[in-house]
Length: 115
Image (cartoon, rainbow, N blue to C red):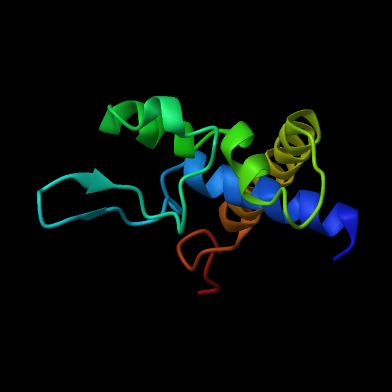
C-alpha cells in the first residue's frame, strides 16, 4: 500500500473514532469482564486494561491507531494528526459548500408569479 494512502486511511479512521462513528464494538466474556473490540490488545493498551473508560478513550487516539498498523508500515502519530486535520478541513469545506448551495436554491415561494 502506498504510504500516503495508508496515512490517509489511518487519519480517516482516527476521525471516525474521534467522532464516535467507527469505534469497534466491545464484548464481555463469561466472567463479565469487558474486552475491547480490537482483534488483539496492543502493547500501548496494556497499562489501560483495568479501566474501561480509559481504554475507550485510548482507542480514539492516533497513538493507538499507529500501533495497530505498525505491521503494515511505519507511520508516525504526527503524520496521522496532520492528515486528520487536513481531512477535517476538507470535510468542513464540503459541508459549508453544501449548506450554501442549499441556501441559494430558488424556492417556489421566492419566485414572483406572473399574474
